[in-house]
Image 1 (spheres, rainbow, N blue to C red):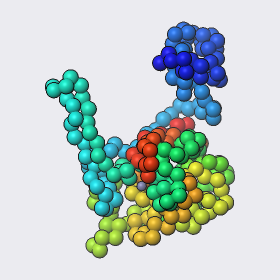
Image 2 (image 1 turned 135 degrees about the horizontal axis):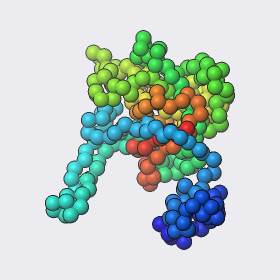
Image 3 (image 1 turned 60 degrees about the vertical axis):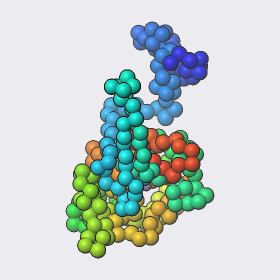
Image 4 (image 1 turned 90 degrees about the horizontal axis):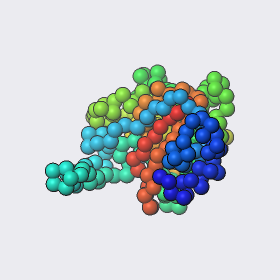
Length: 273
Ligand SMILES: [Zn+2]
């Protein structure tokens, strides 16, 4: 931890070593602090942290046609003296990020997305009441305007997140996909109109849903994916616990993977406020 680099970034940070010493921390402890806790460019102060991530495993519902998630023992305490597993999975498994290149050949790959877009204000639009009556319900421009009447204009670089109540179904593949007899899935998502509004009238970093897809279940055109991702914004799918965070005022941390050339991937997503 006491690499010269860590110490250098610590010394240049907002909290000087002298300040920490004033608060009773020894120089050794201060130097051992990770540089990220010293650097705080957006001044985040928080009391609560909520994990917006589902636990990923072989049972988690996948979009139809996706390769299964596999986890197999690689080394064991018995044989090797330590433990580890081999993973193989489709990039779009579990709570995950869609990078622009997923639907746009010229779009940014997951390792190219600017980190500034991963620490952003969260705006949660709750359509759960409507979803109880209509599983195919979508977030509309009116939903965004209604949110703004209550909470003020969407902050710049916001992540606009749909809370539909659907994450409660994630324990059952059947309930989460909610396919009818002809195989058409029924779950909520964003409307293309809402995304057009966000892209032209507001400045957002990305959008997120608590369902399998940014587009609602019956979509065959993937209009929301094809509208959003070519603008080099990201999407988040299969989010959890959106009901537990305030509609306005939380900061989202998106722990997207940094795989060279990746189209996205399972991500640890946290909200703090
Ligand atoms: Zn995806």
